[in-house]
Image (tube, rainbow, N blue to C red; front, side, top):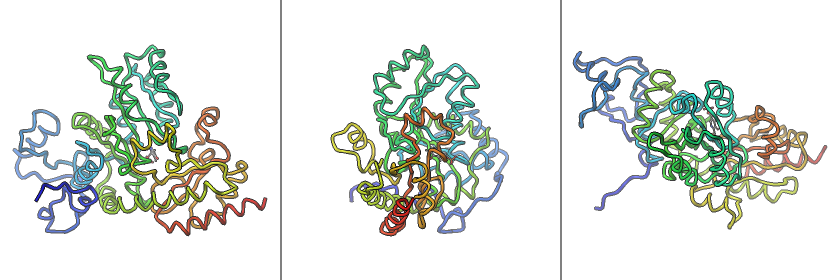
Length: 419
Ligand SMILES: *Cc1c(COP(=O)(O)O)cnc(C)c1O
């Protein structure tokens, strides 16, 4: 027989778990423990030498279990399984998406450095950049949707801080407008500003598309970040985050995590292991539903425009980027309803099956009003530039029957006419 590599979805039930270490249990138990017993003092000494980088690991040696802030079987198995989707060397899981993001920014940026980031960004990330990184003297430069790559290079040069460029941080597709950015092109920009003593990193928040539909590391990114609260958790019952990248970068991220102590708990890691078993079937169904719903919305007379990757017109630049870096259009749809806030709110208040809530990627479908909810903190002028207006509504599509979802959208849109 020829050698065969299993697909990640086939490995989500078993990979990295050894039943013989847990009384033969088919499922990995929750290792709800703070500390681990060493067999001998010599063993404890050896583990600490590795954990603290006092000496190099010998070829066959593995870091043993020490203390749950440093390592824990639930976290390690989860990290190994998550690494499969993005084909990453390593992964670190965090107690939230924001703690994953802020830990990466803190580890790789120092006062005086330049951070270039795409707009719009997740509100929490935007806040951290403007209210924390600014305060500690990190220079920041935001780029707008549709800004030409040459223009971005010019902006970096004009900033006078080009030799201090430490990181380019992207979110694509952007929340809530589904605007996409060419990851490969930005990895080339990062390379362009490389010097002997400095290598700018490209980090991508892949929450909207990952880990199934887009693999930034394969497009030239150095670091990929997730709010695991969204698709990875997938059931709207936990908060968690993850960072993936090469071994060298992950050692740095995990070291800072050890000292910030913002790792995920064993129980949450165990819930995420359970979620990963159905990740592909959930996400496949979600994107299938979303395409049907986007098609339906795009023909509705009360809707002005639908923003969905599955509706991009062939031949456009966005379509080419989408085809190059995504394998499916995802399950996030936004659209402009005809009218303004009043019409948008009437629609939202009349939904029966879709729930009115922020967050995304879960099994249940959600609807929200970005301007007054998730993006309420964004500067009004920027919001306009990014098309986050009174009439914009964002949907996260779940695994329900698409017929039922369309019925619900239809009846809620019908109510809008009665004003
Ligand atoms: C939700 C979200 C985050 C923040 O994640 P938390 O788990 O809520 O901390 C970051 N980025 C994106 C794109 C998100 O949707």
